[in-house]
Image 1 (cartoon, rainbow, N blue to C red):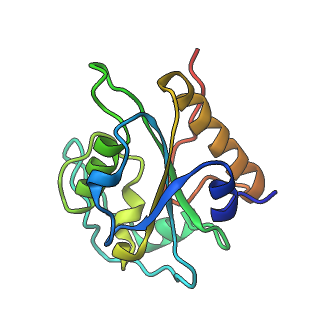
Image 2: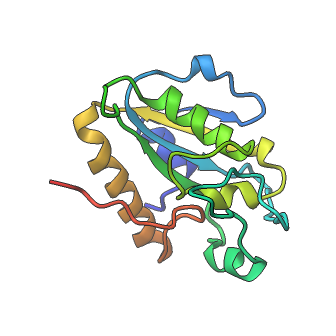
Image 3: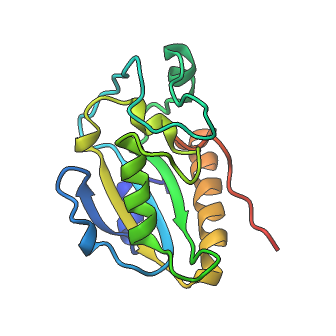
Amino acid sequence: MMMNRKTLKSDGFAGFRSFDSLEIIRVPQGTGVFAVLRPNEFEPHFLKISTAGTFKKKNPTLPADAIWAEWVDGADILYLGKAGPGSKGNRGLRIQIKEFLDFGRGRPPGHWDSRLIWQLTHTDELILAWKELPAEEVSQAEAAYHAAFLADHGKLPFANLVQAKVRN
């Protein structure tokens, strides 16, 4: 079965809100995984300069040929990430997604992996979905979703530059 919006829904993902219409207060606070999807009929166009914040003094902007090399034709999933509990146990989906969105507004990120999202035009139309999971299942689930996508498409989702691995 091809990994896409339909399979995410059948696997328990919820939300499916555009970045523009997302009310962060409605995102659950618990741990889990989340996905960024393109809406139907969304065609990729890229900004010359990313809207993302800098990370460790590095510019998030990539040249057009590097971005196109990551694009996955026919895939509606653009990014798959996780939201663990954090070292103090006070993180989760709401905080992770808020920081992800803030990254696109130019704030420094906690990680670098999703930066290609923020070089797309019309990011307000992109869709966020999430799935709550117990903290001990989050890393395994992220790795499994990455592996399933890779098996279907031969590469990771567009903005996932590093494949998640399960840590023992």
